[in-house]
Image 1 (cartoon, rainbow, N blue to C red):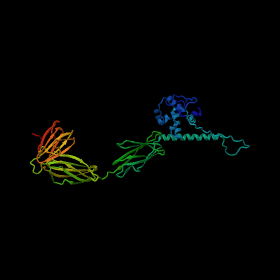
Image 2: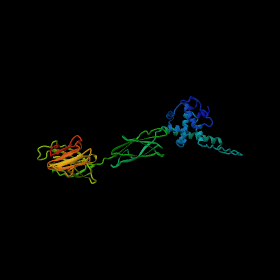
Image 3: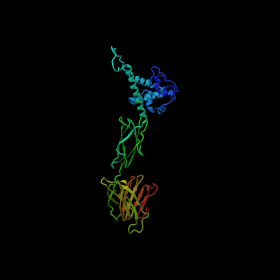
Length: 453
């Protein structure tokens, strides 16, 4: 057995590795590229890149780069040589010859040590004389020790998981100011390590460490507890850090005060006639203000509630001014009512004020609204033609609202009953009819519209 066979790994001596069939490494034909030899050797071995990655612990992208001759895609320096040597051994090729071919193809010409023949001397010198044999032996020993150290380093590296540390925040549990919305996480891992940051209910963040192993990432913060799990993977070995780092950053909830609310109108116990009730006031620390009204019962002096019974008015949002002021009006039917104003703020805080009001109509007030399409109208108030429509009547566009007030009656003649909606003293009666035909109606206090004689 030659010294070459002694130096070759067990899988290359003829016993046969996984799939090599016990054959000796073939001699490459002249001019064959190293990349082609690697691909051909793997195919002859009967394995694919996925299996080769699993058995050599070399990432598939680097195996493919070696078989394509894309040497610039390999890690620099000793890492590339280590990958190439380990892959050559796995494929049953001579690793030294493969490395020499790789150097040649890349234009790297190894420098042979110069052997100097000593000049003849008349008499032998005393002491130790370093001859060519001793020098060559020393160089071979140093080279062998270097190779052994490199292989040992590679084996140690492939067997150890990457390091991982979080340097900011400096502690695992951190509390920040209540107005903080983001934080920059910082840490260290292996060179060009792949770092993943996960948080419940959020999309995972992935980033690459720098050449010195440092990394940083900005994460969004929500009020309350923000929990992050940081992990790392060494791209050259595929190994993950043994223990992910858990970081908890807490953003405290701010103390939110309830909004203030002041009503300047209506006054408590207000009594009005024939008109909308103004609602005005101011608020602070509120995001919205709503106004609602609830029917309580007949007004003092009324025998019973009007028919049909007035319906309560649901809460409606009013517009807020820049200074927190608001103003609106509520149309109410005759009777006793409670007007409720609510100012709502953050974190569900709210403030509510109520006012009791009474509506006692005098005479008759009719509100006419035109809907869906333009309509012709002519109106009489207490028997006299209203100047709003004139003696010949007038066409009004859809969306138009008209108000007529009198002492006893209001008579309406419309070109389309289905588009003419009326309210009498705050009570809504809807459209005057279901058809688009013309019609004439008499309106009186406390009574639904009736057809004119």
